[in-house]
Figure 1 (cartoon, rainbow, N blue to C red):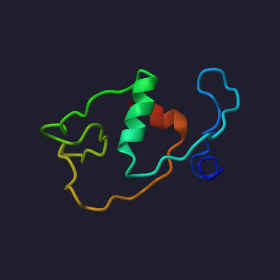
Figure 2: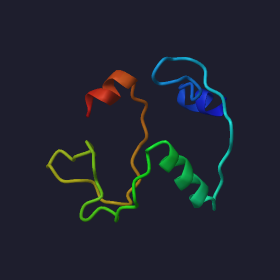
Figure 3: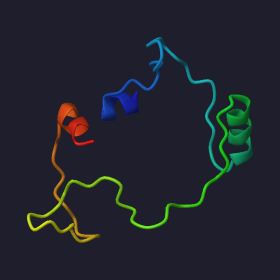
Length: 90
């Protein structure tokens, strides 16, 4: 209910058919072994990979007029963007 309220997304709607899903368990840390077993059973397990090398900026459209990137750690203004505009930036 909180996810739906905050993100306006129904977390219990099936992404494939739109049907209603239900919570069957909560998994909390440190239960990595349980998570691995569940993922292996469903054929979704992937071994851990190393962290990415190099620049951590994957997508940032906040480029200054002179073409430079903003300073890391400098707070930026948060603005509302509708979903169509958001997805158009990718």
